[in-house]
Image 1: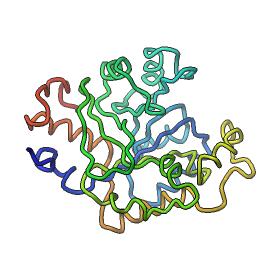
Image 2 (image 1 turned 180 degrees about the horizontal axis):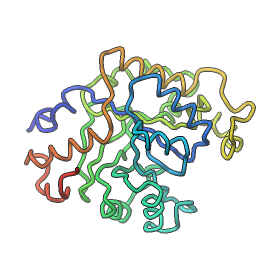
Image 3 (image 1 turned 120 degrees about the vertical axis):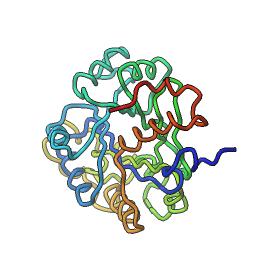
Length: 271
């Protein structure tokens, strides 16, 4: 049996930390809070974009963030009522994106075939239960899949109230992919639980500033973000840009026959 570290290289020899965010229609005040928090550290940020945002557009234009698509394929989506309409919405608003994570991780054969045809090269689908030793997967459409190690709402769903980062330390520093994902709205609200979010949700969106009482005054997502990042950086690790990891691994597949019998399915090398 092939050694994963030999075929995948550095990504499986040590933890490879990547930081992403799902925009999820976050109000600008939450986006600003999120960017301020993340800006405290040298973190390359990859945002899966859902909707127009002056702040995120500014950061992307300045080269301070990279962007992917966060299409909403669910019924009633403001992105469109068909797969083609949703992809056209994303293409129109975020034309240079080459990566995707769908809203609610919704997917099927038809959607992923259409995304591959639209030029998507990698995704961050597949949320794990803080699993160690994660390796990439090659989807049958040729899209490279980077499974997600940590997401803020899955963490507070499993540990509402305590949100103890110590509970994931047994896998946090294991070798393999460590894609972390946070939502600007949850960071802005300092959400401690789904129950708290549900109780304030109607007063969060379409506002220029946070409404009274919506920001949690206690231990919440903002604290978890700071503690997880501090632990990683204090241990001597750095975060790697999402696209650098994804595109580097795609190229590796072309030169390691044990990884894929049909490397031509990946298309031409990404520039």
